Length: 295
Image (cartoon, rainbow, N blue to C red; front, side, top):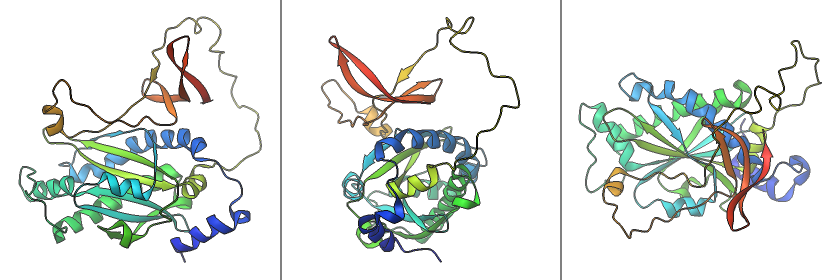
């Protein structure tokens, strides 16, 4: 039987012996970045049935630290929140869907062009609730795959438009949030977000230790030696990764100010794959990145 979220909150607050020291939020950011890269390769197959049978393009933002209060503050209109449970202990995570993208998908499912009602309804219609259940199933299946299979199987538990009523976990808990954008040819992209408490991430991202084994093959060539050492490689430091609606982008004009949040751990990427993370600083009046972790 899955342990209720309230029990996890009690343990996290009062019984450190059950949890051990565990990795910090900063230590979990790089691992979650790599997990996100796996998720964008697995999730499109599950979302193909919502995209006319063709796997859509899924893009993922940088992990951002947040709380339930900040998630609620960022949502200006109707949204649906789904509590999901991970593994046999039922460790909690949260999936959030804003109303406009969901209603656009519903309209397309019934042969429309993806029109969103204006004004938005106060609650989700039954057709939207049924669609949300199918999307939750696709997300749960993709997360189960990237988490390592049945050992960390993900399942949707309950859904609500109010975070207060859903009460997924301690409102003061430090969370890491991933934002995903789904793009399909000829239609507006739609998005969702996934938020993970520290305890849940630590359980699914910490790999079991195995005895060292002798390599079955010869050791790979040293990349620091020629002819590899002098090969140029483009390295990108991703300071800000944000999602904006097309209507807002089309209305941009000189003088507009866009508030952005810089992640506490900046990923360094080569060809879209994270190779290291660091923090932003300054060296001799130039912006610099101090490496904290390399893979």
